[in-house]
Image (cartoon, rainbow, N blue to C red):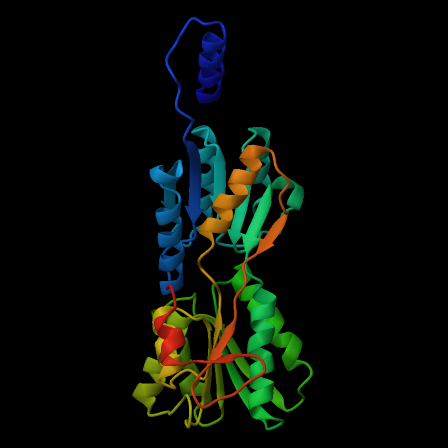
Length: 326
């Protein structure tokens, strides 16, 4: 309806029946966010809300799916009914997107997949803006191999949400490195659902089963690492630089890097949440009829605690931490 009205107004002006100026259309964007499970997610949401503003020519409709795939599908269908100009989805899980993406395509609404990935045919969506989760996992694995220098590792892994591309990618990447190290043994893998409470619960369970048997804990985001630290503190287990347990985390959020700076986390692999400007520039290209990439990878990096030098991670300093935008 909105597009039909714009065409009608343009026709009236062309015929000279109206002399007033018409303001450029505001671009409407429906944003279906995963939820609010972590500090990283909060930074990502804030980035979108501060980028897709009226001052920048946008009207943003935001839905927090609270890590519920069904809620997120319903949000996308609502955006289709509302005839949004664009739909941006940070998918809760990879699978189960074919039908609703087909509905958006039939309605002529471009869909941008952001942050994570979907397993649907790429022809069903317009473009993707993301980080490379597999490379993140490989960065963690390469750092660990470099740090251990051939010594044995008994590893516990607290994964993220089941079915999330961040979980799948980081697991794949880390395993790509682990398979080349016969001296490594992964004792157990459980999901902490990307939350601090989940990380603490899983770590408490691990400690009951494997106390004294592990020397590496890998948490697939910072919030899980906070929970794991709480559990190890309560059990009297030392970790970080000089501790009995090497602690690896992902996301490199403000607080996560502060723990890295303090030596509590040995290595923290960034997943850059500042993606909204890239998405906005993509939308502007589509609007202008310009060529655009099917996938844009947002760069990120890894950091290690002071006193550690690495070919795979930047040694964190107070200056680097203070200059971080999130």
